Length: 283
Image 1 (tube, rainbow, N blue to C red):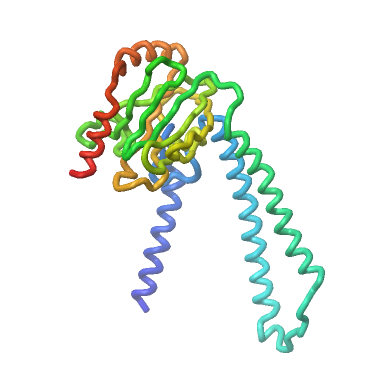
Image 2: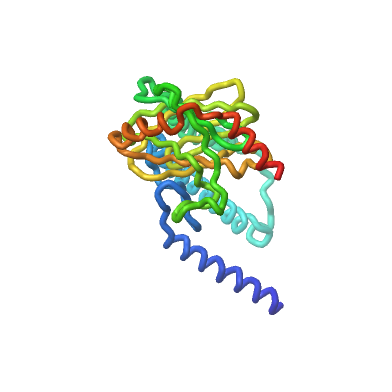
């Protein structure tokens, strides 16, 4: 008995400490933090709408949960054997059956309308200022700046001994995607071998990369900084080791980077990276 009480006290203490700690943690820009509650901070219009929709769903499911809980408590108290020794023989109630059929339909419509609006809003953009194409490989990402002549490169995860101060483990890459802020960016996403998924929570982007198919979405980054994402589709042995790193800069800095990048990545031999990635898996 004492052991059971001790375990209950331990679990309760851990719960209280966890709850207090969660409240004190704040999410860092562009990546998740330990004990973080809720989504990452939004830095793109689609992400803002996703957060708003999520908050609306929290209200809906909380109201439904509390209603069902109250109903169960009422039934347990009102219709138990002691309070109701002679049970009712009622088998049908037309009004109740109509209500519990129509109410879920109304709730689903309330959820479906903003959901479809959000899906349509994040699907594509009519007028884009630039286009970035991401291609998933086993196990790294390749990027092509479609509007620029022959500007493409691969981004491979940095190993622990390659990390610089401040770079997060399993998230930093050797080459960062550099993008301008306040710019409508069309994202084209595909894959070379198997299914991948290009996911960047801060921008509200999570789209499958399918071999032989190009999927499209868009984003508009609102603040300069470094943002991190990961492949979110099980794609093989190193699925957890193909992160995404985006460096958002001002439009002026972006123009300067383009000049340097065209020189740095000119004539890049993509197959060499394929061989390196494959050899890393077999070691």
